[in-house]
Image (cartoon, rainbow, N blue to C red; front, top):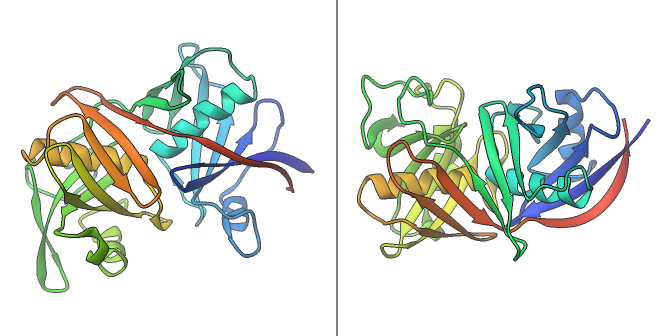
Length: 276
């Protein structure tokens, strides 16, 4: 059986996108792991699946698998590519769509300039919801790694994030500290780790070690979490312009209880077919 797919990227965070509305297949974690291999498969950070909604008040269902086969709750760069994909494939004519994810409903808006604005919902800060092991909610938490304390913010954007402020992202211990925090026992569902360098009140640089994928060129939910952490701790003001290795994202957040708005590009790379 041959399946049509589209290769896309958002700031270099790359995806294989499957339409399971006009074609039918049962995708399993082993398929994502096989196709995600950059030497023997298509190669991607995440596999995005477009499905029919399970509720009448949304337009689509959106599922996400990492390249290691694990299914995750949310992906911000993927959400922008999802919006571009369903519009390019004429699966909808709407400029604003509501999409069901594993962690809730998000809204995607295609702007006239081709950029996609995503309403990512309000950040979740309660430790049990993130999930993160802590006695009570705080702006930041000390976490012990290899006998040393690391200060980090813990935030969920539908998926768990740890955000650390660093002096320079170029020399940040992304590949040594990132995986240790990803698998830290205080994060029972693992965690995405952001390394944030604040430049001024509205501009910062960010690198992200993604759960199940390693360092990626960009992480949309990681950018949202980093902006929320920086605004909550008084380092920055909304809107925040974040420069990631793959490009720039604009993040707006009005404060507690308000949704995080993320704006950035979504690019189609090529079309292909793969045998299931």
